[in-house]
Length: 145
Image 1 (spheres, helix red, strand yellow):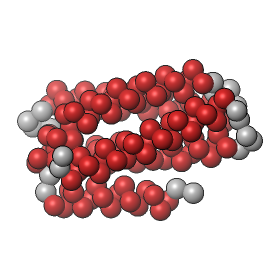
Image 2 (cartoon, helix red, strand yellow):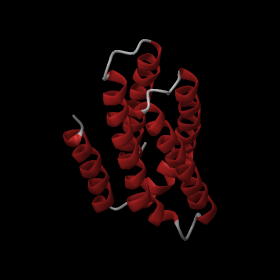
Image 3 (cartoon, one colour):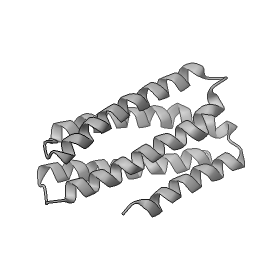
């Protein structure tokens, strides 16, 4: 596994852990816990997709246009669902089934990225891209409360 893939796969694992927390928070809500977990998750997920779109997808635009289009479509669907769920969290109407839908979508997406995108982009990534991925993902950790 190349360095870019390792960093982004690790980020997928951290997002997966946050998803499990969200599912637990919807089952036994403690006031404010769900909102805090959601805020952390949403910030991390959006940052993750932005890193991919800014640093990885341009590396593949010419050689893998269908793959890039697929990732962009998946990201758009994920953003739509995150927006819907964010509103439901704010209104205290989110349910475990809503989180389960997001978990399923993100697991399928992560599997696709881990299997194709990261390998292809990592092979083409320069040291500057590798450093950029690390910095942007690490910067995110410092921002999350």
